[in-house]
Length: 125
Image 1 (cartoon, rainbow, N blue to C red):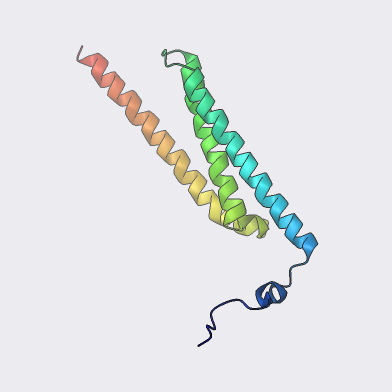
Image 2 (image 1 turned 60 degrees about the vertical axis):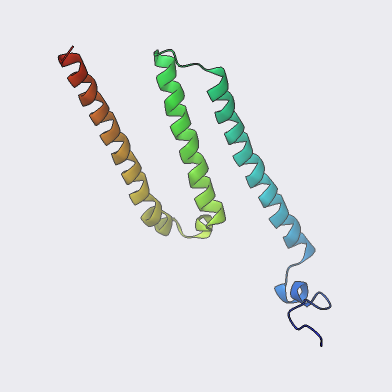
């Protein structure tokens, strides 16, 4: 009995209608995305290893840079792997703007509550 779920005569590649040039473009894009995301991750890891927490302004800048780099990676993943980069500009804004506002809101709430907690601790000392 012959199996019908096997790809025979490479018909899948023929039906996909991809030329070799298209395949090269796709592979180049995948390598570029992989290298960029890897580079950002390596920078984050080295920043975490090199810089020590000492309570100065420098540490605050390091934390802010971690947040920015993570948001850049997340946005790039959404644009490339979820194919949002191929959409019209208005659709991108409709999808990304609420997320950006929500992230800014969470940062605002975190900072506000952190400052309030610090003030409460200083009051009872």
